[in-house]
Length: 103
Figure 1 (tube, rainbow, N blue to C red):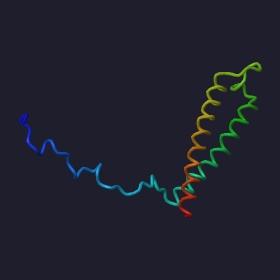
Figure 2 (figure 1 turned 30 degrees about the vertical axis):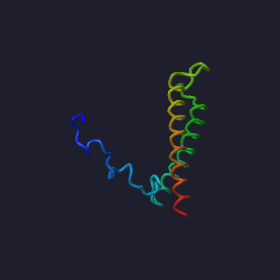
Figure 3 (figure 1 turned 180 degrees about the horizontal axis):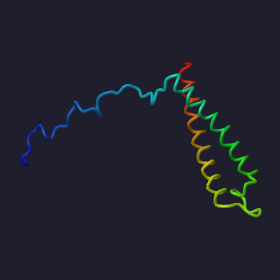
Figure 4 (figure 1 turned 90 degrees about the vertical axis):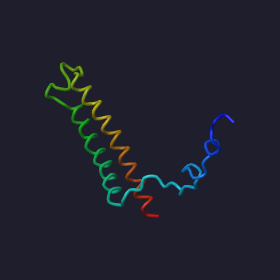
């Protein structure tokens, strides 16, 4: 032999990889949390669409200067888009949680 003991050459049978695992269910959200996330998604749609409409109609000179969009407009539009997308993703998670809690 090469100096290794017999136990070092034999695979272990009690490793977690070889034991049967319980079926994975993923993250389970409570019904309250699911409804909160879904409501947040709806709120996000209402708030950010309204914000963007108001930004386009801005007459203060922040969003548009002499008819041209300003950096303020582009930055706030980008923030609105990102927030809208994150709100949508959060709302989808909430809707999935509501569906799973029903059965």
